[in-house]
Length: 225
Length: 225
Image: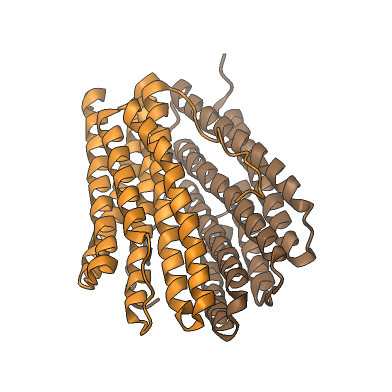
């Protein structure tokens, strides 16, 4: 006997949200390594990543099973296919949190540690984007999803500003090259996490409203950034 | 009247392979900008990206429609869900080719252009991985998929070696900082393309053999790289 579709959809949403919670914890931990020099966080982040990886496989299997055993249509079908994609975005966000943790640990090892500049502000904005994207999934809220899409430009601008600062920092003091490259990668990973939050917001708009918002702005000039 | 499942599966595979061909062309073009200083490639890459983005939406819609209108089971269902994920990987590979093109154009603008080091060798290896991953999709060939998984370590090693060289290059000559950061990003984008090729190979193993190979090696030490 199969469960009612509604119950199955709830179960799938529940697992996706459990995974999202782990991703938020991993991201929070990775940011703490840098701001609080808390190296013990690293072990916890690896534990989260292990759980995230296990959930990724579980969610994929659950979604595939639902597609096979029921005949979902319309909004239910859109939710299941969106869940498959959100699952993949969340897993990558977990990997990026691990990357941030790794770069931060490396950064703390250098004798000449440069100023972290706007990294904490950027991290704060990215964490807020992720939080809102997850709320959008939880409540199927297209207004929240749109708010995520609007934040992406601000994160991008902050990243570009930081890249310039770091390159200038290296030019001023070549002994800080390795440390500044670590910082550049932390900023880059944060920006990619914001991109994945954007993907999730687009998937929410797709399953809630059935509208396709991808690639609306992908045709900017190759030379302009 | 719906088409036979076999025909629909063929159509879906055909669209995925058309998209893969565009991604290979975009990657080839982006590598040429750097090696042949061929800035005209940039326009072509943007055209490919536009086609790739349109195909991403078309493939998602086709796959969702197949899930809604037919009741695929077993290998057919696995192929359709794998196609949704491969589609997303291919789209990101297209974006990364654009990133490489953008960094290369920027690199050619600097007065002090550093040696590109092992970038052409890394690009060659990555292009080969992508080619084999696409062949694995085309022929549902799990042996080719395994070959892709085996190549990933070699690309990673090359990237790490290059990162060190570039940081040393900056330390030796701080005026080359901006150019070396561009090179680091090119290497990073190439490595991410290799990661996506690996994801595709894992999806091939999943749809051909029904086996789950993700995260088998994800628990390496956080400190070791």
